[in-house]
Image (cartoon, rainbow, N blue to C red; front, side):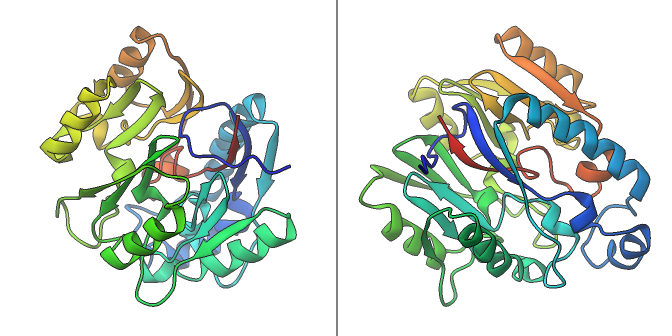
Length: 291
């Protein structure tokens, strides 16, 4: 029985991921593709496999069902970041259409995968609507924050709002800054990660004043990521359960602040699978069900 998820923090029961074997394919494929996908450097195949093994082992310790997306010639390196082509609700998946043109082939592959695994689909973006899953953040089970930026447009926000109107109380549109421009990946989830119902890791320098104040007014404690750790994906934190989370290694200040807030923190090395493609643990996972 599908339980869905409109939480970023409840205990994860089912998650979808994509292994480097299916996304990166081989060292030769990486050599040919990393510049096209705007990676910061060429990933090393063997190290990527080693890093992913650790990452997946942490997931499997905490998540009952781990599902793997298949390889497809319609997807590229970025498909390792399984969060972005869909967003899950209590009623099923919303199939999105990436604001990064190179990723737009992922949606149909994902849709077929969900159908084959009997996972309900609520709807699919149409027309000019563009959105990445990384721009959609459930602040609680009735409140959805949506980042408006290079990857998600107003047409998508209108369609998503219509899809969830019967079981959501509030949609909060968060204007994202220009920052480093359209070639870079700045999602709403780049600057906020919910770790518990009342705890979030944030990078306030890129956060609109109204949104930061809204979080405080809702009683959410904010863990502030320092500049150099933001560049290391320090604000990209995956909640496996309330105050149980995973971070990419190399962010000791953020890790200590999480520990001080009573969180249990697991680390994985992410030089190849996270840093070079600028996708942390939330990007690598698409939580289907949380209970």
